Length: 113
Image 1 (tube, helix red, strand yellow):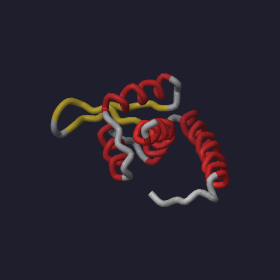
Image 2 (image 1 turned 60 degrees about the vertical axis):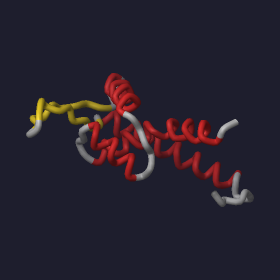
Image 3 (image 1 turned 30 degrees about the vertical axis):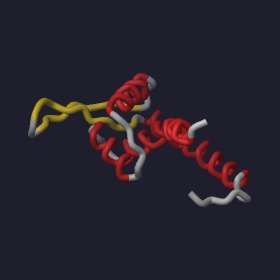
């Protein structure tokens, strides 16, 4: 079993939470989301992000507005809907429970990388 594969699966598992959290802060363009994720070393490609944004929009958690761009065609900016904000709060509760459970069940394991 390869550590890199497990690491990638763990990151994919929290991607939806991170993306919703970023969008809940302010209306954002997809490349802004990618840049914010890169800043915290959670690398995501456009081919992963766009389908996820579409899925979240179709679920009623996101909406978008078109805005004129100074350097090309109009751009689609995303923001969370009230349902998206509520869903994010629920995800944060689940995340906090999960972090606590993992910390408790691994507290005797050495945390050296």
